[in-house]
Image (cartoon, rainbow, N blue to C red; front, side):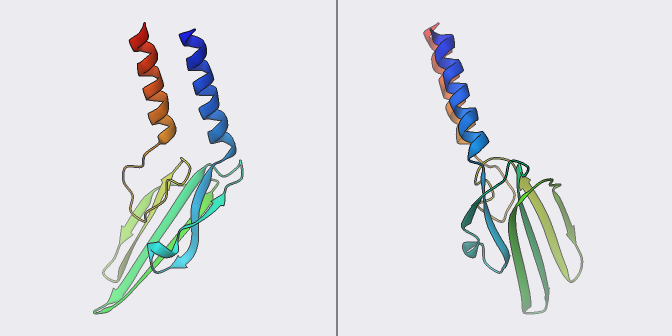
Length: 123
């Protein structure tokens, strides 16, 4: 019985993830607050990619944030005396909420872990 519940839970989580993968998207915005539009990605685009570029001289500074669904993504960063840039990648729905890379929460993994703990505790 417990195994059946666990299988149903895992199946439900995988189906929801497979058909509803979304990313925040924007093109060349100066503020992250302007990058809160969501887009449902195609099945061939399993990554959310965020590119942040900053440049400036003295008090003149410019930041450009672009967020997209992506077929492939490789995290990277660079810096020069005039500017810097970074590319961050993630692969859970709406994981690119901020321009900064860091820990991203996966609610599917959290629910799956909780379900597994409950099943193991009953046995």
